[in-house]
Amino acid sequence: MDISRKELQGFVEIFYQSPFKIFYINSKDGLSFTHPFAFFVSLGITTPLETIERISECLQRVDGGRYTTKVVVLKSSNISGQFLNSVFSENPDSQYPVDPESYPTEFWTQSTVQELLSKFPENSIERQKLEKLVERLNQDGWGSDVIYFTKDDYRVYHSKVNYSRSENMDEYRIGIYVEENI
Image (cartoon, one colour):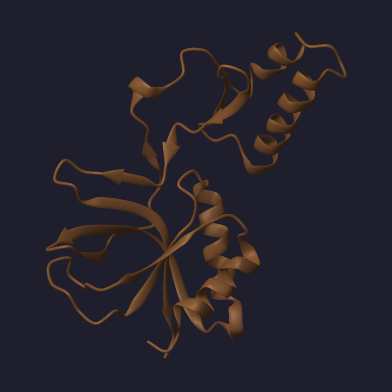
């Protein structure tokens, strides 16, 4: 594996400015450790699947097609204090649902947010903050996201995420597999 983690980080930062993590993939079968042979880029936990796919496509074009990339689910198992990272599945069609117990009781969707906006005067601070959230969601795509009110502010609630933990503590992340073409 000639690509360095630092080099990959530099390429990802060209296309994605939010925080992200890079993991080594060190198992082909999910059972035994091997020398790391590829990387996994984990973008933000709430990053839409469409954005992950776009970043994956951009990374494929870096350096004249130097890298093979694909959207995958990484399985991480803690074995004696070390993480065994393997590709669990390829091309996930959706993200992991958030526990329904944590869903806000009052929220607004893309189709109901105009009703909420109409409650505020045209140039009020509250309306301007809310309009910025709506603009961001319109730009990024609403997907299954909603707007909700906390004690003192409106926020975006993501009902689907790129991370899940199983009962046996295995972790599953949706992100980008990166391998150098040889």
